[in-house]
Image (cartoon, rainbow, N blue to C red; front, side, top):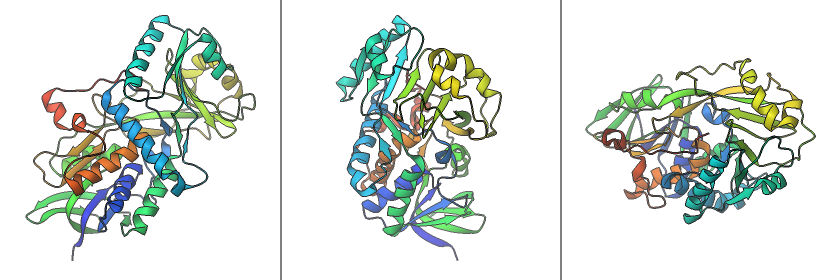
Length: 383
């Protein structure tokens, strides 16, 4: 006999667990998370950098970030210590006066929307990060930006959701989604689930899940490397997420070490998550030029890793109901912003399911139908 629930969520990463958490807070008890792995957050959540920032150049990304920050601030007493959200800041740096003017324009846009951001000259940048090298024209700093512990946040959402009655099935790989007169049926390798609502929170595998329901979802997996250095005692124990806007390289603290990230524009789409030892050579020169103390620490290839972004054509998420498939909701394509936007995304999807509309954030711009209409959103501050 098929199992039944009100809402089935495909994927127990930070997005799926956030949806379950928010549904529980809104009184939904018969919620079932379906996770193909044997632990929650084993996919992209476990490989994420974990940054959170409001320094974006589109309305919807700014709104999603500010809403997520508000939710995390409100949950901080429940989460307790250690905090999952650390406001170390994001520091964007450039040596190019033209890029600095673009940053100044972006900062004005952000401040108009309630973002805490300041424009810095060279002296201001070096005061924030005296360990930087090379030519500096200036930059911007967001004091409310910072880092999230992806695994801890995912586990908090799941713990609270299950305490409120949600359930989770591990090793539950979805093989099909069938429309029935009574709703939807999710087929798995071990049994079926009949439900009123299905939420696609399958991360890089979202397109495959959407296809099962007859939905064309433009989300592609793209590999992203994260490098970990050896111990780096010369840097302060807490530094901002620091982005060299000229080279596209960013660094932040990872305990006594430093994490280095760089988005390779030549990386093809695919599910390859193998770490490429040669990747470190690609970023060696820009790291040496801008972050010499980090370069001196060397790369610990054994601790470094690669994970997957789930990327849409315009690097914005797809949030909302799927047209022509009643009860099928999409929470996909965050393009590297999944962890930071998971609190707001979970609440928005839960509001759509429970109340029929997203009340906390206007997510109309993130509808899947924007691709058919040719209304893509263009974010200039993509990392």
